[in-house]
Image (cartoon, rainbow, N blue to C red; front, side, top):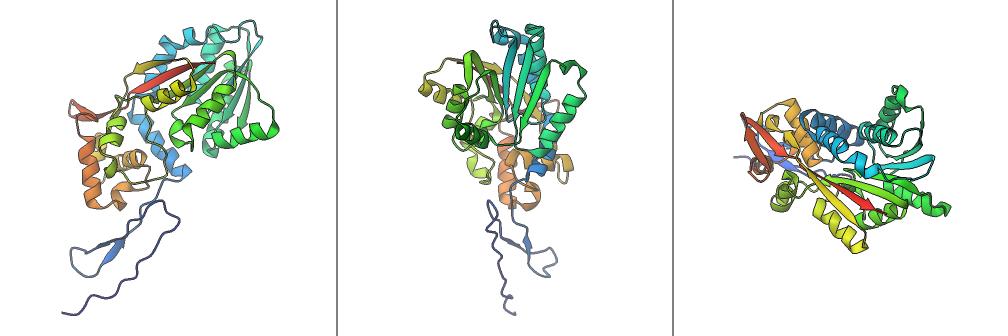
Length: 322
């Protein structure tokens, strides 16, 4: 038997994690290398996120909160003011922002709304602007977009030495991606005007994400997608800062059935979103892929309804007082 040829291993210093896996084809002709695993780019994340929204009740869950709780929450904002100042941090494509603005318009008729947005993804900013252009009912609202991360915005504010105050600030599903969660919350809380409110929407401790991150973290690749944090991590920060807050828990589900269908394109993008990895099913070692799929089926993560696998995507809405 001839000795196996010497194989050159490529290194991937720019990748967040590596997977140099040598594999023998079925015909034993030669060894080949599976591409290295890497994190999603901003554009790839947008596509994976779309698939997540199409198959989850995340926005319906937020709509229920907006309908049942938001009118009372925002009723006391800006008493006696002719203008309400609003700041959205990590606003994405703006659908949820505009729903909350319409609630403010309904609760405070005739009041002008000064709305600022902090969002680093250029595709999201463009989509948000297009949404505004198609909304004739927002004539009494001004919009300023800052294509920045929350940290870049914070640094700009501190460099200017001015500290604009807002009546309402919201941070929807974005604290996973900041460097220093405590510092970020402390800064934006300091941006609240008298009687202002900060709304933080984050995954609940009862969600499948919480269980997955706690019990099966070794199944997840170490991407740069951010912190594994749920509601309790945020409330601990708020308690340490000594600020009053109230938590609302709402159920939400995500149909991940296609994640278990071999070769399914939708399932592949779902796994990409879940792991923050480009083509996870095609680049992850088979053992890692099997372990993660098995973890997703555990009862603390998912339930089965009519043959569909529904991942728990429960949300916590945290309302923080100024």
